[in-house]
Length: 117
Length: 109
Image (tube, rainbow over all chains, first blue to last red; front, side, top):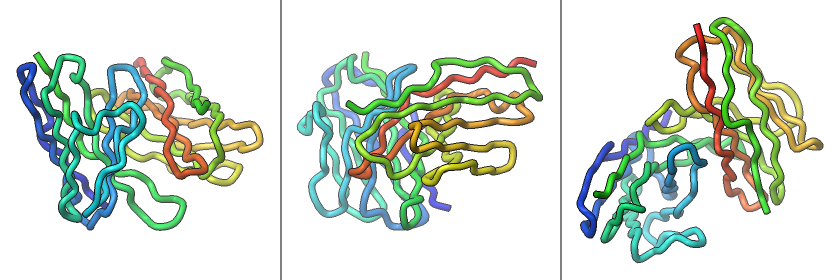
């Protein structure tokens, strides 16, 4: 099956710095990747849909200038948290849809835990 | 609005059976998913239901009733490694996934 690799798995940064998270689809080419954020004991929240070769589609309430998404190739999408603040501390997870037809499931990356001091 | 409801936490005994319920109210329906998520890790796919009835996969089974907006995940012969959160997600008419907050399952020896 598809394998999705996400890096880094854990990052600690100072307030005001920027952090880049990479998501790679290892087994197949992905024209679409999803970025989620998950706060402790809460549901997965879709932040944006990353589209290869075009602009990402952001969910309502997600600042596109703060969370920069680049999907420059069919196997790599990056999420950059710009000027990070403590409230941005969260678990960020990317996912890739897999399979054809309606039963397409999501394969998730390992997740990246961001802590902003 | 759209929402998915599932219990916050459940406790069960090793070797026993547990049923985790999920009720949903969404704009349309294009399938229901169950995912398992261990603490600090990303979710992994367990099952998919789009038609009414029971889907069995080893120790895990998932049931769907579209008329009732209801699903359950049944775990048999519980093992300690089954301690995790179980996420219910529904794909709506726009093919967007709506996620429940997850049910934390605690397995006791």
